[in-house]
Length: 186
Image 1 (cartoon, rainbow, N blue to C red):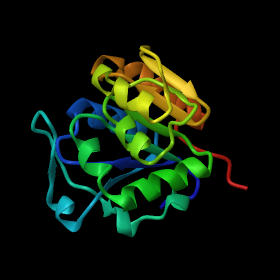
Image 2 (image 1 turned 135 degrees about the vertical axis):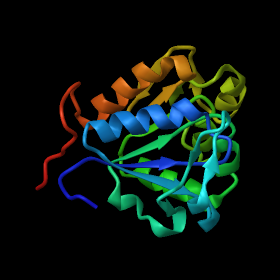
Image 3 (image 1 turned 90 degrees about the horizontal axis):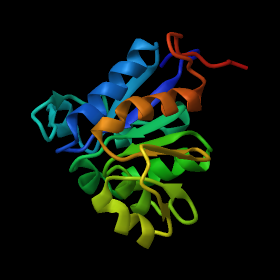
Image 4 (image 1 turned 180 degrees about the horizontal axis):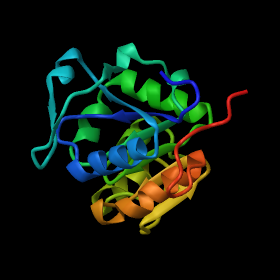
């Protein structure tokens, strides 16, 4: 991995909401970030299909990555989070990035992973409206807004919120519009 650029992990589960994965990934790559698509198993390297037919191949499985190697975690929505949250390794990976205070960005159904990881207690978040009850049950304060930032957590509701979601992600890692992604190396 590059040592001077922003390193982003993107969790990929079958049935992901296509635009919620492809648009943030494209924006991060365009800004110069090093993006790694992370799946559950080796078969994900042969292709994972989104809700609307987009097929992506993951770069690595969760067993092949170290949370310490990333500056940011992105969790797209759709049906993927229901599959991702059933895997304790995904939850541990998510918890480790959160515990390090690094940005964790989840959109649509993505906060289901955060709920299953036990990361919503006392946090203000948003999600797709059908996930609101689950957010509240996990101790989160649900609000219906396009994007919500609570500390290192960034959450959004749906595909129409993607531009604001990407802007919040960029802000969290210090990328300004039109600028290449980099971070200070100490």
